Image (cartoon, rainbow, N blue to C red; front, top):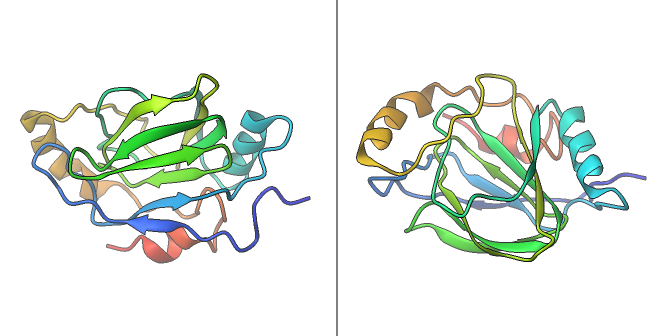
Length: 173
């Protein structure tokens, strides 16, 4: 039985550079209710991401402070519970995410957990490439990130839909 809805299509958002959070001209993607998390949600999401070539996985929540990654793209699969997360920095957008949702953040996309249910659990992963870096929104980090973000390779696969997934069509330079 497939764990991903065959007609899953992500919502797309493009967040502007706000001077502290660089964001990315490639769209931030959110699949709502795309994954049937089943009886072992974290393992289900890890299997899906791994099958689609995304690794270096972790299980946790989303940090409660604003941050971004300047050397790598990131995917967040919600395994349990729900949260309100600010994406794109202060000028971005607060979104409710819940079990079965997936957010795909191009390098530089700000994110911060504003509130979460007690059982909120996320599986994070990255495409092949450099390890995850964590940057807080400061003028110095912003300046460095403007140099590294354009160098981050576009993934060969969408972590949810694979080699023919929307990310592959939508992320272009």
